[in-house]
Amino acid sequence: MSGARIFVLHKKDLIKMGIIVLVALALIIAALVILLPRRAADPGETARFVPGVYSSMIVLYDEPLHVRVTVSENEILSVYMTDMADMQRVFYPLFEPRMRDLAEEVLRYQSAHITPQTDYPVTTWILHEAVRSALQMAETEVE
Image (cartoon, rainbow, N blue to C red; front, side):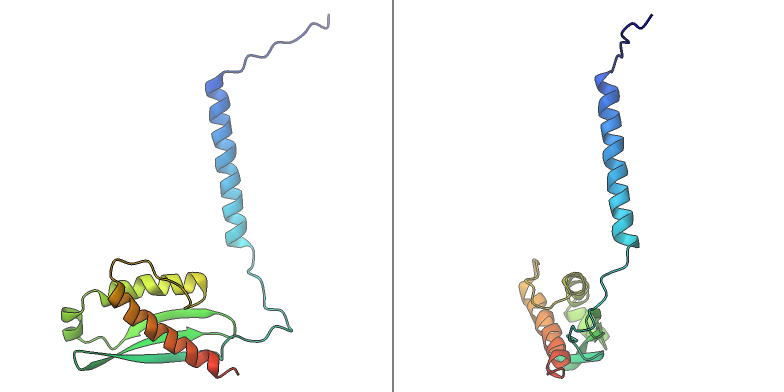
């Protein structure tokens, strides 16, 4: 006898299965993004920077503070501050956290031509100008 078969699907089970499928797809996409190699530079593509470490100086409380940018031919590798004295840390406590936030954005977008989102615009502007100055040194030597 070839009778019709009846399947009973519960709404709760369908929703669970849909969520599991969406999570699985998200994990697969994330794994692909992380594991696939980044796009290599084309042989005909000109370099954006001269590889090296470039520095610009800010004077705070009569002491120099250096903002350094490390670049390869086509990528910004790191952005950081050096030589921050204890006196500067006391009088300018926001510089280190703002520098970390700014460095994160510059590395994410691979450019200093960004508008940093911050509650401390003056501090961020000072650091942003120092980063832009250091990157300009790397770019102008290419020309």
